[in-house]
Each structure stands twice: as C-alpha cells, then as structure tokens.
Amino acid sequence: MKILITGGAGFIGTNFILYHHQHFPQDQIINFDKLTYAGDKSNLKELEKTSRYHFVLGDIADRKMVDRVMRGVDLVVNFAAESHVDRSIANPRAFLETNVLGTYCLLEAALENKVSRFHHISTDEVFGALSLASKNKFSEQTKYDPSSPYSASKAASDHLVLSYYHTFGLPVTITNCSNNYGPYQYPEKFIPRMITNLLLGQKIPIYGDGKHVRDWLYVEDHVRAVEAVLAHGKPGETYCVGGLKKDVNNLTLAKAILKIMKKDPDKWLEFVSDRAGHDRRYAVSWQKINQDLGWEPKYSLEEGLRATVSWYQNNQTWWQNKKKEAESFYQELAKK
Ligand code: NAD
Ligand code: TDX
Image 1 (cartoon, helix red, strand yellow):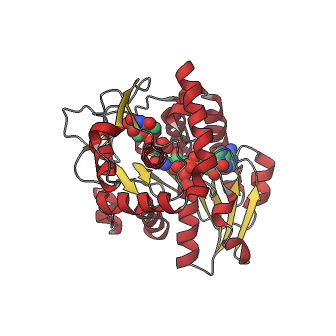
Image 2: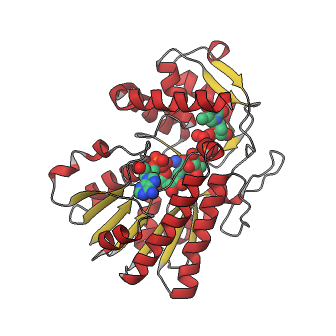
C-alpha cells in the first residue's frame, strides 16, 4: 500500500507516521509537507534510513506538484493545515490558502488518480461553541457554526470534502477530533506552552477567566482513531473523536500540570487578556466511533499529561528555538 500523508512534519502527522510505520512496516509512506514554522522534518529522521519512507517538500495548494506526488497513491490522509486559532486572528489569509484551496487541490488530484480513500483530518471547532450551562456535546449531527477564521476555514474544507463524495463519488471519510496533546506539539498551543513556560521558570498565561472548557485527546489515541476509520470507516461518513467524558476547564488543566511538575498554583498562574471571539466550551460525544468501530481512548488525562510533561522535560533541544518563535509571535499579538 502506498500512502500519502500531508503535513506529516507537524504534530499529529508525525505521531501518525511513527505509529503507522511501526504497525504496518510494509506500507510505503510519502510525507508531503511545506515545512512552515510548524513543520520539522527531523522529527522523522530515523525513518529516512528506511526505503519505505520518503519526504517531499511542497505545498498542498500547488496543483501541479500535488498531481505529481499523488501518482500511484492508494490512500491519502490530509493533516496539512494552518492549525493555530491565535494566528488565524492575526493573519487569516494563509488559513484560506492552505485549509481551503489546498484541500481543493488534493481532492482534484485524488479524483484524477482514483485513490481508494481520501481521509480528511478536521476539528470539533467547526461546530462553534457550547454554553457552560449546557450538558450538550458535539456529535456527527451537530450543525456547523464556526467562529474563528481557523474554524471557518476547516468548516469550508469539510464541506468541500463531502461534496466530492456526493458529487463525484470520491471515497472520503472525515474525523472531527478535539484538542490533541502529546509529544512533538508546537509550543504555541496551550499544554506545551504551559509545560515549557514552567521549565523556563515562567508563569502560565490563562486567557480571560480560565473557565473555558476543551475536550483533551492524547495524540496516540487520536492516531488509533484515524487508523480505525481507515480500516473500517464507511466512505461518506464523518466520525467525532474525543478524549474525555467530563468537562475540564483551562484552570483545572493548568492546576493538574502544576501538580505533576510540583509547583505551587498560587505562584505560577497569571490571568491575561482574553482571545477575541474565544469559544466557551467544547465537548465531544465519541459514541458513534465507539459503537461502529470499537474505538475508545486508552489514556486517562492524568496518564497523558504525565507522558507529555516527561517528553518536554527530556526533549528540550527539540523545543527551544520553536519556543522563541512562538513567544515572539505572542509578543507581537499583544502589541496589536
Ligand atoms: P501542526 O500545525 O502541528 O502541523 C501542520 C503541518 O502542516 C506542518 O508540518 C506544516 O508544515 C504543514 N503545512 C502547513 N501548510 C501546508 C501546505 N500548504 N502544504 C503542505 N504542508 C503544509 O498541526 P497539527 O496540530 O498536527 O494538526 C494537524 C491537523 O489536525 C490539522 O488539519 C488540524 O486542523 C487538525 N486538528 C488539530 C488539533 C490539535 O489539537 N492539534 C485538533 C483538531 C484537529
Ligand atoms: O497561552 C494560552 N492560554 C490559554 O488560556 C493559550 C495558548 C491558550 N489558552 C486557552 C485557549 C483555549 O481555551 O487554552 C485553550 C486551548 O487553546 P489552544 O491550545 O490554542 O487550542 P484551541 O484554540 O482550543 O484549538 C486547538 O484545538 C482544536 C488546536 O489548536 C486546533 O488546531 C484544533 O482544531
């Protein structure tokens, strides 16, 4: 089997490729990535020694290049995206180019090359926000209602992907997952930002009142969910993937990390200005993927956080320069 992974030098793509190569070593993997600030080719340098892995530098919005790289491919998994909400507030254009136009180019090439499956990685953010007072969760039936330029671009890409199934019969599947965390996540995102700040002796910045709720999914559990959909998912279907059963707000999450890192919560938290249009609450029902495909998360939040803290403690050279870039982005954002 020849698999095209887009965005494989990023956080989730890297974890997916490592997992897939370990479990299906006979498959040929092409990692097609533009290497934006978020991509790091060296994550997968061990695999470069094998003939089963190839890295190709390129942009998913470059139609000709995408056509070339798609030749002979059986399966496409599209992880490539601009993925950070705060950056989409500062500069939405790249989100439209990669997330919308890029997905369109991939779909066209997938159709032309008759791939047997096009799997698109999406997000629970396409559903908008739930209120803190409600007990509702997002499911496959929830109406799309995105609120940031990031989530709007992901919503547009999901609609396009499904349109290629309905209009042209392209065998597509989509997963809408919640907030991932784990090894190789760029330190702009909340969990690695908290851990790396603490390792550098800096406080955790909490946006607004800290009562915003996210559903946290350990990246290996997400990768297993994608594998389950590739193996047994039905073309034309979408699957919601989440990691928790109960709400956890940002303040509670920060305190859990402080506890693991043995820091006093009274000294290491700092409330800062809120994000514009900050979605209040996300909660995901993962009943369908559980019932139809037998998937469930393996990691508790405590286990996932411990594994993540220890990875960042042991891989400081991986994140040091990325941290500088991420914090200079935040400093610029604060000036606006
Ligand atoms: P990431 O930002 O860590 O990595 C994105 C990767 O895509 C990088 O390697 C980057 O170089 C590459 N890329 C960006 N633009 C490209 C282009 N035009 N052409 C080719 N490659 C390009 O992102 P991530 O956190 O790994 O997210 C992967 C996917 O999962 C995204 O589609 C994202 O929307 C989705 N998602 C992420 C989360 C999360 O919590 N991280 C949650 C839900 C959904
Ligand atoms: O310093 C911070 N302080 C803080 O309070 C940062 C970076 C974030 N936050 C809050 C904002 C959110 O409520 O933490 C929560 C999580 O923030 P992010 O890590 O930026 O994630 P989020 O905006 O929820 O989006 C993430 O999950 C869904 C990913 O970045 C998306 O790619 C994915 O689709």
